[in-house]
Length: 223
Image (cartoon, rainbow, N blue to C red; front, side):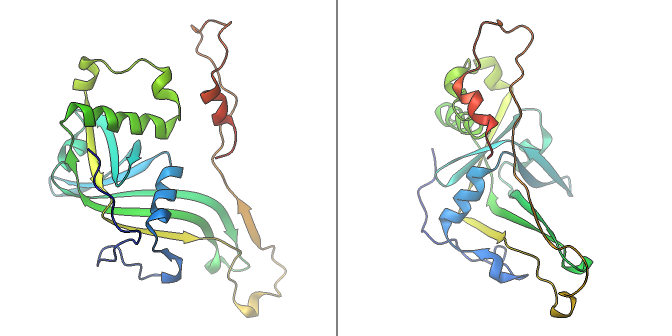
């Protein structure tokens, strides 16, 4: 099942130490959880036949384990099992418009996880992992939808990635222009960004009398 809890501080290793703009690094494990829990899509980096492959996929967290899922025929998921992988999650919070092109940037929150991935074979943990992935995407959906059948489970792989080695980096605030540029007649500031969802659109075969469930309506607010 899920890995035991680690210390409140993120471990600093040669792979996780933030060397570029270290003031943006976050050292608390809760900062890692906050980034992962706010995201919807991660990117899995893995080596296949000597070449790097980066796969966007859904994920979910349970304690100090990140669960990823994919088709059992997916080469990247299969290749990741037992191999060192890198998983990243990035949240865009704003576009930073500076007076000079050089100082343009983004406000963001990002997490980078290094680990040896494990293919989940225990049936109970597989269901726990798929539950985590489903709830990460649409909170409340697992209880509302039909659970997976044995045939569907056979077509699905679940990958477990421990969160023992990870880094978090955050940038927020206004542009950091050079002092000599502050008087330039160029607009500068931040354009905030957030993930939002539009009004739900029912499938054409759904009974028109069926109300949109609360857990779907909840998605339409800002995240």
